[in-house]
Image (cartoon, rainbow over all chains, first blue to last red):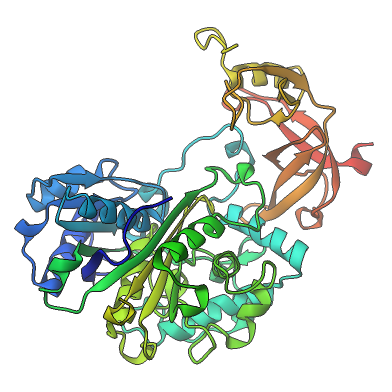
Length: 384
Length: 130
């Protein structure tokens, strides 16, 4: 059981790099550095204040080395944990521990990807696995598609309900000036789009964009002296369950059912206390699974829960207000951008899409093929 | 007992069975549970009390999808729960990929290997395979 203390550390800086499609020859490290400088500007700290770095990208195997070299810093603490899109939620938990232990005082978490520019195949090279590769699953989509197929079989979830997730995300994206997608989307358009891996059409799948981001954390005491109101880390939870989809025991239950309760316990809150959810939407099935596994509806009810505009703007639960990986931005390991939107909602910086009175936001990251699940709960000063 | 990996690997033994037309798996002799993919120790316990068995080759579709690669016919990919108590990824052949249904009974056939690709198990509906 974690002994980390609720709200002993806070996010003080958060920024995206340029998103969407970047110029030829831009490197993932360029994007990490650009986001880092923006995040430093966001909090008023200097590059030389950073003494802990946390990073991951599929394009640079030893990314903490590359990031430190690029920025020209010699951090006292570094962590290159890479478990897919949830890596950065893990980094928040690890930064929390490092800050509490005094191993560093200002922690940078950074990510960058140019997968749209260089192609998905080049950005994230498939690994050969004798037990799966000969069957040519289109990974990761086919793994999530089989989870969706199980959910449909066991609980009567429909393709229309899956599509409602994509339509809701698009409605939020239309309120986000930097979202990739700019046009409205209907359930019918999702269903009739090009089939990728049944039951998913291309509109059930996350975008393929470039992009990156950075967040900066420090101790609660130091956070209070900086430019913006601190966004406190109230709770974190990490869980991994498998590496390959053939080895996931029940395709309808993710390890969010473990990471969520850990985070809620540490934060001392219940799911209903959360004002806004930022859930990694790699595919339309994932927010459905996470709403169930994090305790927002009973297992099997997720499809019915998301239909009828419940998670769209004006719905009963604000989910993925940025437009998500489905409509805003998805550079491959999207978790850092999931965190940034949650931070901004707690700060009240989200303009037209701002959730009123958002004091608690939950950011949930997913990695691999539903393999790694990490939950972070942020709170404003009002939650202390 | 831990295998001598300088002599034979778990996958190597598995492939020898495949080339004999057999779907092999391991059984933990402590509790008779099936282990798949083949490995040097029992997941969870670390026990090395593992024995090789040959499956009867009958199973049930646990999950299924149909992959659409550009310019190719639709391709089935499925997870099969084999009757002896293990699961593997495979495909169900011999029927329209969209007609592969969760719960369908299937029977194994070993796809012969060639220079590029070692042999691997595929499945067909039990009725069609007889």
